[in-house]
Length: 115
Length: 115
Image (cartoon, rainbow over all chains, first blue to last red; front, side, top):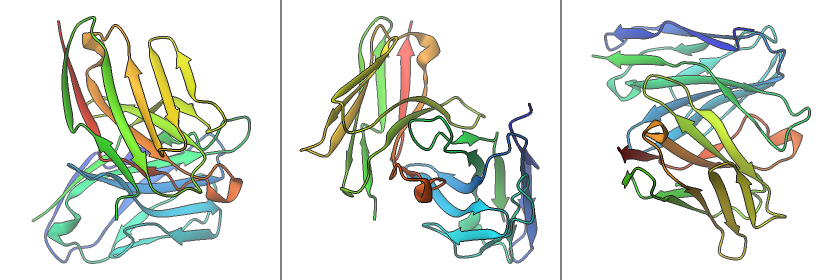
């Protein structure tokens, strides 16, 4: 199992450009989430999905779109990049079966810089 | 609005010492409290977790202490080793299936263990 994979690893954008961060998981998990990590802020939830076709907003959703057409994939779209979106982005997946609680498995992250 | 507050921001410990990281939460609906460990350039990984029906959970050198009345929980790392040097995040969520995919994280603690 590859677990949770994210592409690209690094990306530099200019203000106003758009792009899609890719996330895929091969564990057949129902739940997938996107977080951003900023120094001193921890990880903050952007959007999450409880299954194919179902998404909802997290704590910091503005400027981001998501969709989930399959169980495996959960792309994050930046519509018009802003310097405030410079961050490290993590995708995670989880499944409630057999666990104490929400054990989320994280990808390796995408480091995004917006100039 | 930070629902989970973590301290200290950074911690330096000598090899063999005890590392202690503290977290406090506000939402009394939270009933699942995991700790994640993150090495540089990697995604966070679950270290240990607790539900509020117990006051302490130990796994090897790692122990969570939980104080429900004070809405506080802490991570203790006994016999700290240089390999424990990482960033540690506390988190919280509701344990029910509808709350999966929505962890609320603390700000993180950078732990450095000197040989």
